[in-house]
Length: 344
Image (tube, rainbow, N blue to C red; front, side):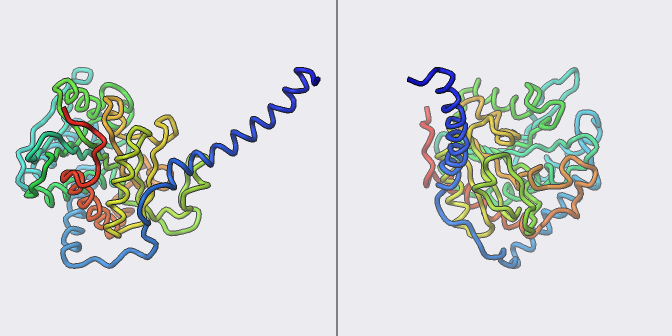
C-alpha cells in the first residue's frame, strides 16, 4: 500500500487540476445558460424619436459632468446643485420627488426618490448613484446611469401596470462610503425593509455609456475570460446566485428588444466586480437585484479619472440601451415573466 506521503503527492496535483477545470465549468453554468440570443449585428441607426432621446441624454449629462462636475460630500455645493437639478428634471417629467435625508458625520446627505404607483402590491426599483469619485467629473461613472434613469422616468411615467415603479438616485456610492452604512442605497434598502415594503426587483444602472469594438478591449476577473467576448461592445447584467431568475428574465427581455449585444451572469457575490454598486445593498436585505453596466473598470480606461468626460460617451448606444431597459422595466411591472418573489 502506498504511503500517506505518496498518496498526497499524487492527489494534490490531481485536486488542483480538478479545481482548474471546475472554474471554467462553473463560469459556464452561471453565464452561458442565459436565454435568448445576443445581438451580433452592428447597432441599428437611430430613428427620429431616438435622436430626440439622445439629445436629452446629452443635455442632461452636460449639466451633471460639465456645469456641475465633481460631486460628493467633500464638495457640498456641487452635491446640492446636482440634487436640485435631478429633482427639477423629475418634476418636469410629472413626478413629485422627495428627499430621503440621512446624516453622515454631521452632514446631511440626500437620496432622491420618485414613484409611479401600480395597481397591486409591490415595487420595481430602478436606481443609480449620482455622486462621483474624488477628482472625477463622473460622466460615465455614474452620469450615464443617472441620465438613463431620467430618460426612463420620462418614458414610463404614464404607464399603467400591476407593480409600482420607484426611481431612486442614490448618494454616497463612491469611496470612502462604498460598502459602508453611509451608502445611500444601504440607507434606502434598510428603510424599505423596516417599513415592510414589498420590493420585487431592483435594477442598478451603473456606468452604461462606454463601448469599444476593438479586440482585447474587454477584461474580466478570472475565469470569465473563457466565456465572455473579448470586445467591449455589450451591455452586462450581473446578479448574485439568489437573483438568478431575475437575471435570466431581464436578459431575455432585453435581447428581445434587439438593440445591443448583451451578456448576463448570476455569480457568487464575492467574485470581484459582482457587488460593486448599489444593487448589493438590496442583496443584503434579501431582495433580488441586478447591476446593468458596461463593466466599468474592466473596460473603461477613464474609470475614476479626471478624463471621465462626456466626449467618451457613445450616446447612440446609450440611447439604445435605454430603449431595451424600458422594455425590461415594463415587463417586470406587468409581471409578464419574473415571479421569483412572493409578495406578503
